[in-house]
Length: 583
Image 1 (cartoon, rainbow, N blue to C red):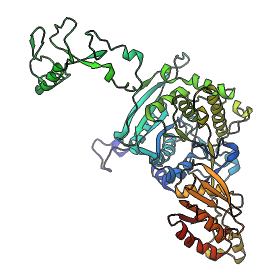
Image 2 (cartoon, rainbow, N blue to C red):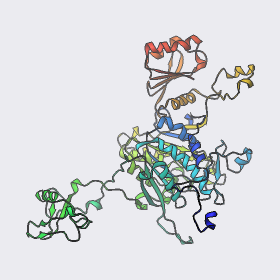
Image 3 (cartoon, rainbow, N blue to C red):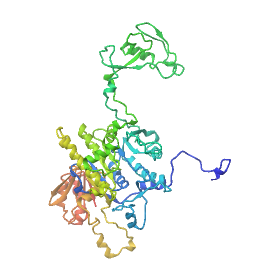
Image 4 (cartoon, rainbow, N blue to C red):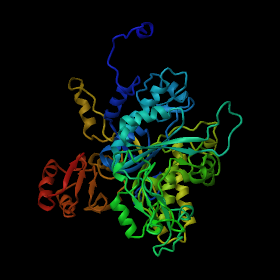
């Protein structure tokens, strides 16, 4: 205000170029804050639980990204997300939301049935852009950690927040790692109902983790190859001519100025408005290898350089994706309706769009992450592309179990949450892909399963008493530190997270000395969560002979204190490299 009213410069803090908003510091703290949560497996909602390498995580994606940090740090090649566009009508996550009246929150759709915080970010909100940036900042900061050095993220967005998102990603990923702002033609017709301009494109911004990222070239098209001909019957095959003229002038590039001679007419030509593109020694080499073309009658004063089709590389991607190339919103709706029979999700992305993303930025066996999964188009596309090219790509989908409004077609069709829509789509898509490709060799080996994991509170009982508030009678409640409703597999997945072991590794169950033992990926990890006191030295010896890389026991399972003490010595003798853990 002082500066506005003053005709001279008013003293203040030194300016610097930066993106700032109310809540940015809190967003950074939120991203770094630890959580007491875990991932609980859900076999009944999964497909091929024991063998699939795909994951579907149900819960707040901020919690999920934090839980994945240890296990998937630097292991994800490609992230694609389609977050809320902040149109004023959609819900966003509010990570520090707190309110006493929980019933009111749920009734007003600010919390769903399992307590996830969702708020409608209306344009009347004084922190309309700030709240959205806070939500995105925490998640993108954590997501960057998961990318490989040559990894990349694609983010769909519309005109409303594109400027802010670009600045946000410049800060998180580095301005130098901006790769593209792709304009996707989501519609192919104009609407005369709009007041000013009809929006027919959306943005997909692309940022790499580092300079190690290399975009995949596209296969050559017939149209591109048709530009190559062979007017002089060169035995090396079709070619096209590249200009010998440099965009720079002779004054700008004097080192590329020298006389050249047409070997057929003997005319000598000096550069005038343009320098030559190649040095004199390069000109002589090209001439000696018959790589210069002087025209059909051999009378041109300046030659073309022959570029052969046999040596041509793939096509460089462009930053405009027309609807013929990458689909449109109508196709996205059709893709989903073909599987689920009704229009139960608004504006799902088309399979052809995500397919282009995968083709540009992933290889056959890469890990793909989408933490705003929605209707699970990304998972569908990964399975579809694997069926087409024999790839082994794997996916991790993350979706909040956002409640479907009772007035929607989705609710009437039996889907209570958005997550239920996504899971059912993957189930049906996997079956259809296998049916449509039944005659392809190896299609039976195609992974169309997914392991459902749900974000939940820790498996361990909360111990929140201070010593002076603890009563003697309470001690018996803490004999077993595991919550009563938790299973062996619940405990196993918490151990996998703690140890940073891949959550998609195959799991088998065996019985040793009468006790159930879970084995992860053969001998990568062995877990016995017996709580009946059945873990004896004899059992431990039989397990140690298997020489697992890691082994975990439940504290309540040891037959005696001496057994618990002796297991370390038993493993030292029989399997010295095994890591031992007790929970």
